[in-house]
Image (cartoon, rainbow, N blue to C red):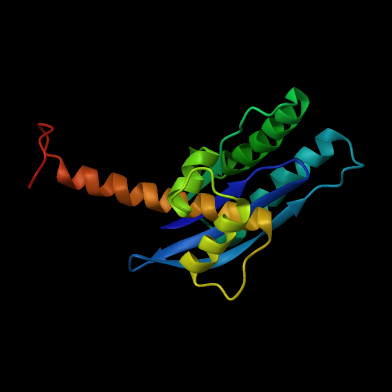
Length: 172
């Protein structure tokens, strides 16, 4: 399974690709799609759409996972973040990828074990989990954390699906 993780943002959209090989995570790539803040919004959205499309074509993930939008104090910022997120989701859907969504709380709990962890803690755990030489750039680390979260949720789901009979009883 190859997972594309996305940390959406209008200025910087982080991405990370992880592959599971023999039940072990393997780092493939990560980075940041940066838009030009002086360009009009439609062009910035296109940059995100084109960037995610290129990543999907080049690295061929099986599934995408993206962080859900949180409601910000500033409604305008929340709206802009939602548009960037929509562009990333649209790029995935255009390439027939299923998209899973996770809240920031779920990501932090999954990767660090604490839902209110700091971004630096997330980056350190991503580095450890993927056995990287150095911590990736903040937005890329967040995207890799979203991909790791999907992998962790998939393992849990697989475990429970294997443990439950058709009648809904737990197999011991």
